Image (cartoon, rainbow, N blue to C red):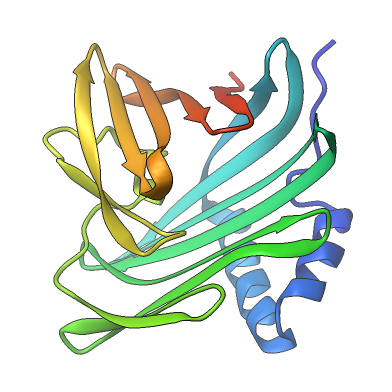
Length: 214
């Protein structure tokens, strides 16, 4: 019997509220509610070996010149001891260009990663947890959020919300793409007829597969 996890239920509201400031959490919640009303939606189960250990909910809404994405996830599995991982990525494009994004990850209720990007003029103000601040210059058209809904045909790099950097993307053929993140972390995306079906996540201590829940 397939097990589904509370991708963004009451438990996660409580966890995120402890991690965000009230103003930030309120802003993200407002985005969530707006997206829920009219979004395209995709759900993925998170597999570790032969077991489903969590799920991801990805949403997109297009409103005129603005496109908004929201990805939330929750998973629980053992690496030496039990790990409960929850994450959120909120990304907004205007006129086809990234205007702002925020990402957050907690492990066992503690902040592990966080980032924030806000366009200003021809650049963008960036923050990556715990203390990295910098200005990004140049147009951003492709992020990992967009990859959940579109195949990145012809792209050689993807702007990754969690690190706020362009990372190399290699087309492996047959709708498969290899994205290499800092510290040699690797994600392999698999598309069928332009639709994302799986993401293979290769890490030092754990390998996971995100499979579309059809």
